[in-house]
Image 1 (tube, helix red, strand yellow):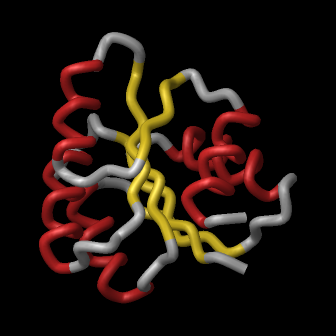
Image 2 (tube, helix red, strand yellow; image 1 turned 90 degrees about the horizontal axis):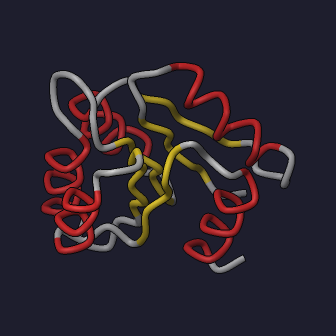
Length: 120
């Protein structure tokens, strides 16, 4: 089963995404609390895909996206954004994000996005 890294500074948001994916059969997760930790854990864990928040302390999701994609051009990264951050989404897509999910999360949308990105 695919290894999915969840990156969000809010633990409850990581738990919500994990719960939605677990109900659809995914069970291999890596978690990070900010972009800097995400970059480090990507190197250590080599996840099959990343679901990453944009707005985080220390290093935001856009910076982490760019750092991961520099080292791993084929990295599959989906960005999470709150309503009203459309400009950041455009930057994320231009920087190599495969898709984006808008908060508040819709569980079906999360699962559909992951299945599409992973080819399931």
